[in-house]
Amino acid sequence: MPVSHHPPLGAVVLCDFSKGFVPPEMVKRRPAIVISPKISARAGLCTVVPISTEVPRVILAYHVELAGLDLPAPWDKGPNWVKADMVYAVSFSRIDLFRRRSPDGSRRIYDEKTLPPEDLLNVRKAVLCGLGMMNLTKHL
Image (cartoon, rainbow, N blue to C red; front, top):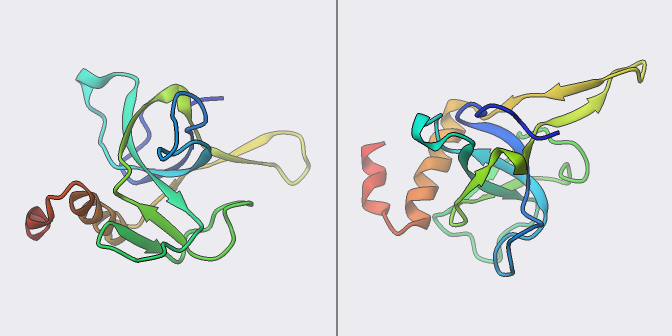
């Protein structure tokens, strides 16, 4: 079930890019990081950058490795990489929280993951680099 409220800044969410996008855009479900705070004039939208399990062929200033991110399968295969050159404003209808079954299997438990402040700062710097605004990173 999609989220009904804006996830916190730095939240790690599951985003469905499978509808309405075409390659080379993101075109499948994948983890993403919320990089925008709640903005009242943008009800129902938040800005995210996707996370990949594939190491970039060439690591550039807009890639950030998140080594300690604990994600469920199939995204638990080694380090995760933020692709901060791929910024999306998405509807809440595309966003879900990670969930798992309770130990007794009777209910869902939602995992609300948020990046540590240092990782979020690195992601925000990478977003600026991905947008060609590297000179602004010195202000963060």
